[in-house]
Length: 171
Length: 294
Image (cartoon, rainbow over the protein chains, first blue to last red):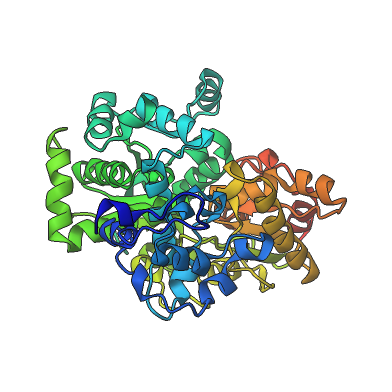
């Protein structure tokens, strides 16, 4: 498609990107998403959908299929609790939870970052774990007769973070 | 019986906030003849990064698997989340040659290689499969006949079933059977297989409270004396957050939430102190009294 047709002119209600679905299909975890026929079983089985107005997995999948890239800017894509109830019950075998994770990753690629992720990523790079253990936690372990916590080779973690593009996220 | 030696994968949540789960597990392991070797070079299982950077999540999980391979031991986890992601990664790397090649390319830079030599199990699998119910029964010296327990499986221990191997994902009976093994009565309640919502606490703290509150209410309605969990995240949501839930909704639950090894340990005659029951936020004094008196 010519560049001009990829994005509808500003002022229009929805921006549509016909290439968007291919990006999802190419991302690991997103391969099955086009099989969705909108039965809504994922939403019916979703515990988060019960308590929120906006989190509707089938709706998010439909938006993505239509090429509405702004789905990545919607806050509700972060509400998935990853319980896999939808994945277990989808009649089309769609890995719905994985598709939600793909939407989250693509959002990150487009520059959406949550505060939570910043601390998570920096802790992993600094310590190898998502929680930074305080000196008092470690001391308390010792006093209770528990063995020391694992200490991963941080040079390894750094190399992996560099190779997978995680380090870039902290810059 | 299988050789009961495992590489213990603690993960992040247990040492950070749920030490009583680790203490009670180590205590029952001692009596059951399970040898737990610490994974000194382990890192995060990768699960929290799946939403951010799939590649790094995969690399972290693969590195943990390699650490256990070098120890020559199967992994035993206590956390459902760690179990789910390590089991999934192990299976995918074993079965998908292209993926393994790609991941091994990365691991090669840190002097490691995934060979596919080990299995990933959760404590409940070690108990039910490797030791077996018949053998476990021999250790029950104080059957907890007076207790009615509402078990809470959590999610990643059985979903998605293509990775976890759960044969009946709509009605898994494993935790139920493990509870009945202790002599306690196991009760069913509405939404017992639904997510506790803990993972949302960093995004919207209201949601985990709403989800946990429902289960507490449903468990109370069927007369449960206590709940039992097998995942530190579920435990935080039901035990550590119970007071907050009660205050937020002006309700009273007062349901103690035990880690499964604490329940089993009590039935094995181990003292509540050794099982670190005093560390629970919702005190278990009431149920302990009935256990001791019986």
